[in-house]
Every structure is written in structure tokens, then in C-alpha cells.
Amino acid sequence: MTTLHLIRESSSQKDFSTYISLVSTNDSIVLLDDGCYNANSHWLTKLNFKNLYVIERHASARAIPLGDNAKSITSDTLVDLICQHNNSITWN
Amino acid sequence: MTNTIAILNTRAPFSHTNAKEALDVALITGTYEIPTSLYFSGDGVWQLINNQKPSELAVKDFLKTFAALEFYDIEEIYVDKPSLEQRGLAANFHIDNVTVLDELSFANSLKQHSIILSF
Image 1 (spheres, each protein chain N blue to C red):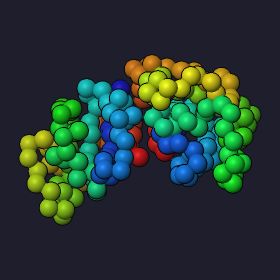
Image 2 (image 1 turned 45 degrees about the vertical axis):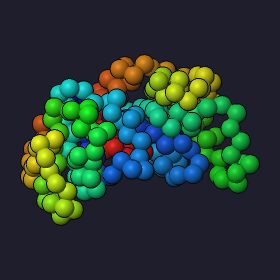
Image 3 (image 1 turned 120 degrees about the vertical axis):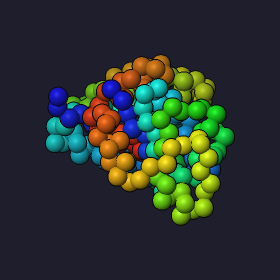
């Protein structure tokens, strides 16, 4: 039972703490759309999630420098990830 | 296994439409007899707190509709205990059959469902 977490918004106006508690070690997290702005944010990097991904095109479009915090993926990889997990939660 | 739906509420009731929309979705899936469970965490716990008076805000009191949930066979209602504690709230809700779960059991229970809609 693993869950795919989708983050599509920057954390500035959001309180993601309630979602953070839903992440288990083997879950995956994907930053897409405005969620890419979180890639280097301290609140996320300090949690050092094992399976953290960012959609490369969404990040480069926003000139977000991608260090080694998150693995860059394409939208096709996202589809594979969706299939590999039992369900998904969008961090609203 | 049959598809079951979990509706995760994380927003307070009145200043955003998330809460009402989540309740509407629950009533719809309930109407179609899709097994539906409700989960409340973060500010979502404010939706269940007793003695609210929405009429004083001139907003539609959709909280009353929570009482109709049981007619839709929606009886699995869970609240995240830490979210209550962080807000200094007691488990005093305006509907009954609410189960308060600690953080881990809340997460595990939520993630059993095939579809999770977050509001």
C-alpha cells in the first residue's frame, strides 16, 4: 500500500502540515505546476523524503534551479508513478 | 475490491467553499451508494465543532446537512486527534458517530481507500 502525493501549489499560502503527516516512507511525492516552487524550500528539504520527484519541464519553465533534492522526471514518468501506487492524494 | 472514496477535509467551513463542496460530493457519492468515508484534519476539524452559529454570518448554514449523512449510509467519519489538540478543541461535535483517531491510525485509515479527494 503506497500512496502518490501530488503537490501543485507553492507553500506560501498553504499549511501542508496536515498532509506531511500522511506520507509514509515508501510513498512518492511529485512536485508539478506551481508545486515546483517548493523544490528547494527548507520545509520540504529538511523532511528529506526518499522518493521526491519534480517535473523537469514545469521547473525549468519557472527558472527554478534543481539541485539534488528532487529527481527530475517527465510527465510520462508521472504516469508510471501513478500506476505504481495504490492511490494518490493532491495536497490541496 | 470495490472502489471506496475518502473525502479529506482540511479547510474551515465559512470563508472558503471547500467545506461545502466536499459535503456536496459526499452526498452525491452517497446517493450512488459508493462507500464513502469522511476525514477531517487541520482546519477541517472546525467543520464539526458544536455550537456554531452560521446565521450570524449571513451564510448558508450547510452544517445542518451533516445530520443527513446517515441517510446516505455515510457513517465512517474520522477526525485527526492532533489537529484537535493543536487548536485546543475538545471532541465536542454537532454530529454523533465521529471517531477520533491518532495521527498514524488516521493516515493509515485514509490511505486504505482507492480514491482520496482532498478539499
